Length: 575
Image (cartoon, rainbow, N blue to C red):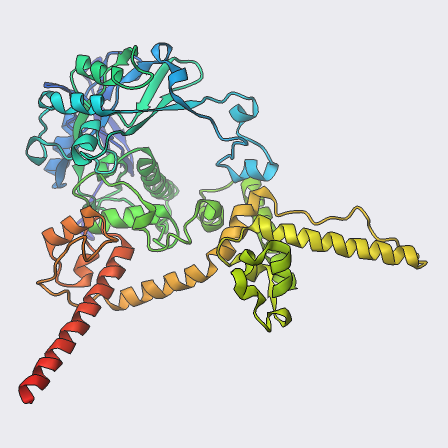
């Protein structure tokens, strides 16, 4: 592309695995979602062999993608090395389920889909009664002894001087025991893999020991004394691309039309990969469609940090990069009070429709219905008033802040149901219960009045106040509960934005003793990089927004104390 001297994707070249023939697939956009396949190496104990992963229901290994890694390298993409692991799969028929603690499925099962919620439906399998229970077991001191005793049989990796660069927040059982030596037990959740299989996934027990050692470790645990392994657990080490070479659409800055998504961008797990796939796929699809129709390039589909966790995830990746497998946490988002599961549709569905990604009329109708219901129920809470003393009498003094509810003068002050709900330890259910009682009493008074008077219009004796529907209950409650916190959140973020250029003292001590709210990872990275300004600090991967705000106030306090000390010394010299 000579106009901006930027290369452009032309398609994909592949080799037919059977005929070895060269295949060219032309395309104006390409999305790479390589997972763990880029120069992947699988490991069990000291055994190493090339592969991207084991096939799900066989002993076969899917081959790695070496040529693609070399191609990316040739085009100047900065590659690094990460690892992840998967635990052994157990035969459920050999597990003593009675010795484990049952973890039943949630009933009623709440569907992800707001369309189903609007219909009042459960997910189909739940509605049919096809639910699977998980079970909880745990490691013990004998397990931990085995984990450490056979540590010398664990693989040696390419990255991190042989230790491997794995996910900090999804560690192997060895890492758990090593890092938390004081712990005598770690939970493991036994998760059946489906309705029609006996295979069980022992969550939290990743550890690529030789198979016979894995079996010893499992058999030291409650309920697994006679367990049999169907497939041993293994680790995989693979290449990833530093995501700082991408834009916020996940398009490569150096090659137009090439998009990357998933573990190739340095992230962990399924959810992070799925989130990136939405953005990369949407932008690639829209760009390809426009090119096919001969139209100009479409407006980029980008989600902001204030709109979605997807926006936080991608902004962190493309601006800060990552040095270890990145996992999305609510704590990474400065707008986390506003980014809730209950309002995901309110935040994103209309934007999806605007960009042509949401086209289902029923889904848009469900959104309209939810918005209307939320508005009606919030308005009802706003309109309902009682004297403070009446709230206290009906709901107990604790509802109104304890004894303070009975202070002189309170009997003349009214509070709305919305204001009461905003107080600590008050739920929407409690408030609506009082509202319903008052409504019933008013209906009773109307009935008594009608009985004593001749009237052409009879009161509706069956009338009652319906509670907020379950489909909007959480949103109504949360929007009122968090209202004041959202205002404070905005103020904190604004003060932080103004502080970007402020200096950080070079001799500052980073220690949990003086920064108790910081994670150990944050302390380590601050001490390693020692940023000189808050703008630099904000670019450190994994440093949470609230930690940056805390650091700002800590530095301001240090500067204030230092200034005071200098003034006192100056006055002392003058005397």
